[in-house]
Length: 148
Image (tube, rainbow, N blue to C red; front, side):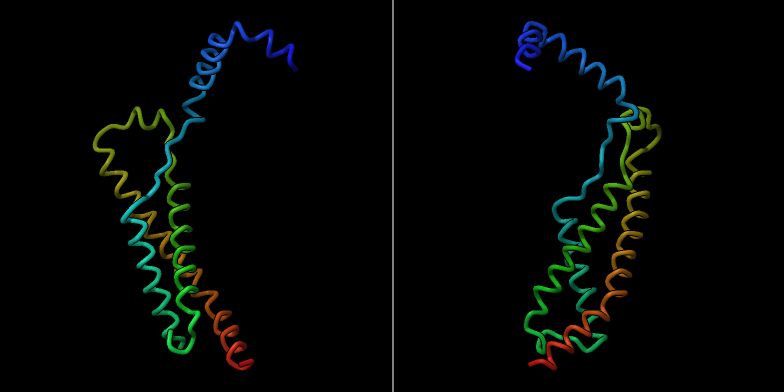
């Protein structure tokens, strides 16, 4: 292996340039830009899911006063649902280099509409997922109460 490295030392710059050229020649299919929501948008999602989870649990008679460890549960699940939405948005909105280079018209407007649709869909999916599993939480809490 040392021989391989020794033989290429003089050709490092041309090899790097050749590799960079090879990678860029594949850019239209291999280079993507992924939408990633940060900052206040993430906080808005977390807060939304905290309220959503609190509301869903309250409908089932589960409240903070009865269950002291409920707050960490709610916060953890709100963050998990937020991560689900953020990952879905990132995976759904990958743009190839060529697509970005050739966009015409008002791409930011089209992107906003597409992002809105995606956000709404992922938020609804996350909420449905939580509601589908909330019965399991009720059973766990009943077991904890009956064991105490």
